[in-house]
Image (cartoon, rainbow, N blue to C red):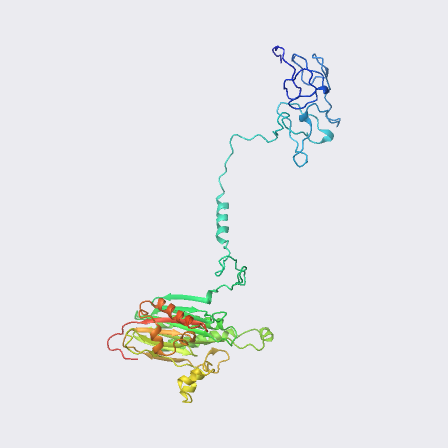
Amino acid sequence: MSQMPQQAAPAKCPSCAEPLESGDLFCGACGYDLSAVPAAPQDHPTLTMGAAGVGSSGVDWPPPEPESSGKPAAPHLPTDLPGTDSGGKPLPASPPPHGSPASPPPHGSPPHGSPVSPASGVRFDRPPEPDEYPLQAPDPRVAASAAESAETTELPKVCVACRAGRVDDDGYCENCGHAQPRERDHMEQEAGPVAAVSDRGLRHHRNEDAFAVGHTALPDGTPAALAVVCDGVSSATRPDEASMAASRAAIEGLLAALPQGTHPQQALHDAIVAAAEAVNALAEEPPSAREHAPHQNAPACTIVAAIVASGLLVVGWVGDSRVYWVPVDRSAPAARLTEDDSWAAQMVAAGLMSEAEAYADERAHAITGWLGADAYELEPHTASFKPDRPGVVVVCSDGLWNYAETAEEMAEVIPPDADVRPLHAARVLVGHALDGGGHDNVTVALLPFPEPPQGAGSA
C-alpha cells in the first residue's frame, strides 16, 4: 500500500513516538535508550512488512527468526519484556495487539509480554468486554430448591435468660449456662368449655405432671366435657412418662365410650383401668435393661378425672390428686369430692389422728394407691353428683391443693368468673401455687358446670 508523502517532522522516540530534542540520549517520556538504534530518517517511506535485510530506507532490521528455531526473539521495545505484578510474580502472558506481528514463542512456551503503556505504565491486558451481557432467567427448579432449603433451615434457639447465647442440644445456654424451658415445663390447653394449665414449679428439675382435656357428645347430642390430671410418682422410674401415658389412655377411652352410650361412671372406671394398663406397659423392659439397673422400680403415677354431662358430675381417682366443687354463688358452700389414697387419709379414717395432725406429719403425702406395675391392687374410686346450681369443677394435683387445701381456701383463690374464663382462672390458680413457693409440679383443669335443669338433685 502506498502512502502519501509527509512534511519533514522532528525526530520522535522509536518506542513511544514522543518528540525528541536534538542530542537526547534517552527519551524524556518513556526513558528509551536512543543509542540502541540508529536515528530514524526524517521521512517515512512505505516499507514491506516482514522484509529481510536492508530495505529501501537503509535501516538494517534483524531478520525474523524461524518458528522452529526455538531461539527467543530479540526485544525491540520495552513492551516486549515480560512484566511482573507488585509482588514480583510474572504477569500472565497475553496475545499481541490486534494487527501486530506475533513473535515466536521461546522454547515452545506461549508468547509472553506485558501490555503496559510505556508512557503511563497502565496495563491494558483485560480482555475486550462485550457491548451487551446476555441475561439468563433463573431456573425455577433451582429457585424452589433454594426456597425449600431456607424453610427447612432452623434458626438457632436463643437463651430465654440472657437473650444472647445460643442453646446447645442438651438445652443449656452456651453463654450463661441457663437451662432452657422444655415443652412440658409449662403447658396450657383449651378444649371447648374445658381449660388446663400445668407448670414445672420452682423446685423440680422437670414436670412430672400431665393432663388431658376434651369434649364430646352423648348419643342424644348432649355435650360432655372431660378432664384428666395425672401426677408422676417421683420416687419411681420415669414418672413423667407414666403420667403422660396414663392421661392419654384415659382421655382416649372416655372419648370412645361416651358417644356409644356408656354410662359416664362406668366409662370413667374403664378409663382408669386403661390408664393403669398403659402405665404397666412401661415396665415391660428387656432383661438387659434390668441387668444394668436392677434396683429401679416400675413407673408410677396417680390419676384423677371428671366428667360433666347432662346435669351429672362424675369423678374418679386413684392416689392423692383431688376434685373440688366451687359454686358460682360463693355464698353457697364449696366441697371436696375425693378422698386421698394416702397415709394421712388412712389415719383420719381410722380415727387415730385428726385431719390437722395427720397432714402435719411428715408421712402425710405417702400414697397408698397409684397406677403402676408394682401397685398392690388397683381400686379405682368413682362417684356421681348432681349439683343443683352452676359452678366450677377443679381437678388438680397436690402441687396446687398444698396451697389451698380445704374447699373454702380453694373457693377463695379461684376467680369469680372462672365459669366463663376457665383458662384465665387456671392460670391464676397455678400462679397462686408458684407465689406460695412452687415446691411441686402444679397442674389444674377447670370444667364449668352449667345451670342444671329443673328438678335436679343436690350434691
